[in-house]
Length: 300
Length: 255
Image 1 (cartoon, chains in turn brown, red):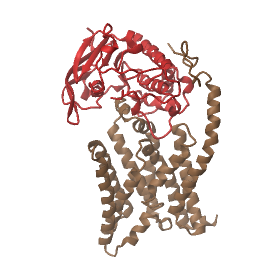
Image 2: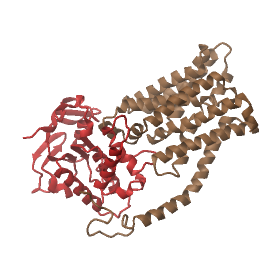
Image 3: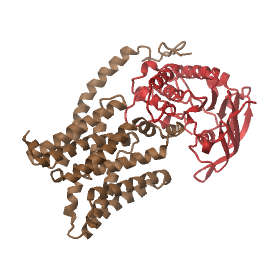
Image 4: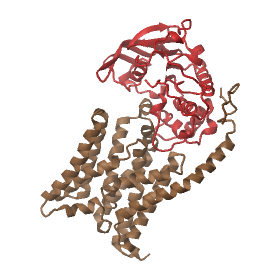
């Protein structure tokens, strides 16, 4: 455990753990809404923020946060109003964001694409104290929203039309999800990089739901996977001198495959247990019940 | 006449550039069970979706419990059962988790108390799904899934139930449970507006039928018993005898 003696490793591990928690916590709602690639889109838009940060000599992290929040809100607005041409508008936003980043960074004095690389693929070892402070603040916000409003966000992401009839402020909650996702992208930017952010939002959730039957369990398992792979990837990169971002993403995909292999026998056992628990629930043959089945007790 | 629970006056609505409702009037009084009938594309689904604010209206007035819909905030009085296709998330969710969403309108800031959890359990009891509370909703048959969506609507103990095609693709056993659940709700004084393709097993419960055709009200009165379902324009059969566990039937009802 000698890596804990180094201040840069302590910062790197803290940043990595926070990303391991927040990325799946937001990602689960995006996956539930079937917008798994939204994080990727926000990552592209955030590049313009990083470029602007260099050009204006402002903090790239805060600039990227501002621009990606703006981009996420714009994406949500396009989703409401531009039903037919929505995907084209989103494509323009994504690639415009990427091109803007490259353009601004090259306009910045002494800037080149080399500066961008550490944001594209992450650069854990250069995380500074002020970066850690911003990451902690932003991560706290993300956890507050994704855990505190879990019932509301679940309802809106599961069935938007029904959520509206329960009186939930659907548009505000959708905007909040988009903004939270944007904040998460910038939290994760230094760790896995903008191009790999979406992997940490989506793959742990996909891995978790191979095992789980409930939303709550999926959430917990996805966050556990997220924390394990970010710590594992950071430590591996310390000993093996491999890029941490790529290591973390490859570990996440490995976790997906391993859990997938474990899930098949588990599903078979559950099916047997369910068959034993509900003998009258689902008749296997084509029998027409004379009256209601035993499992259909009607409370009066 | 008792106080109207739903009141539509001269409501027009367009989807894209196509007029779907051309000025319909519809009143549902307290305690009534009203069926909205009509062929695919007649505007019956759009009509209920204007009531809940899902489809914007071009002109006309909508009132819920005597309040203009735009100012209506008392959503806990309404239980809504959408067409089953709208409720599918990309992440597993248990029956209890889905039904709990229906209770949110009775909570403050989504914090569940003991009474809320009991209400969710009671709603599951009403549709006979209490024994499946911890199962993944994706593992249910079409009819069981529909019962879960009805439990979700009942979880807020609504005074008004709005249901869009509750019987579409539902197996016979679930149809009976649904009819019985609805009967108990009506007996307890709940007002019901339902979109139906054919009257089917709910026929004895229905006080009034409103038949839409091309976005206009064609008939408003007792359910058209004598002429039967076959007289309804463009009617479509739902065959409730598929084996349990089969894929939910797609019978072209998803208008």
